[in-house]
Image (tube, rainbow, N blue to C red; front, side, top):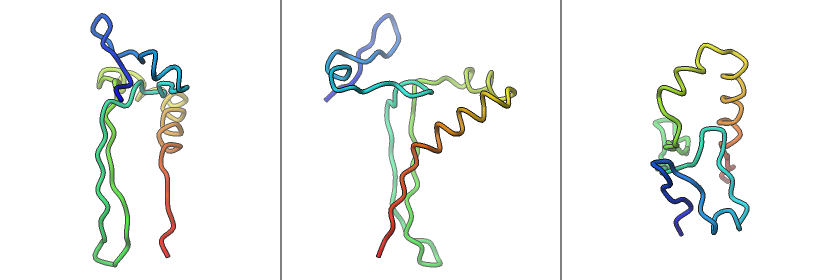
Amino acid sequence: MLLFDEVNGELCLNAEAESKGIQPGIFGLLVAYTYVTEVSSRCALHCQGIGFTAASSDFLASIAANEDVWSECTEALMSQIVGKSWP
């Protein structure tokens, strides 16, 4: 299922996504992501991933110097991290 359409050169949620209650996050729409689950040399199973959003590098650079905004953005990113305990 595609969640967004291109409108005037920008990504926008389509009607199907909106009907499911999907909302863009603080950095816009999550366009793509990838992750890998691996075991470290000390046998710790963990996952590493990266998400690609509609946020531009210019936008991120513009907020980097503002401590309050950067803290809010960091908190939003950290809230997206999900952990799982392994037996």
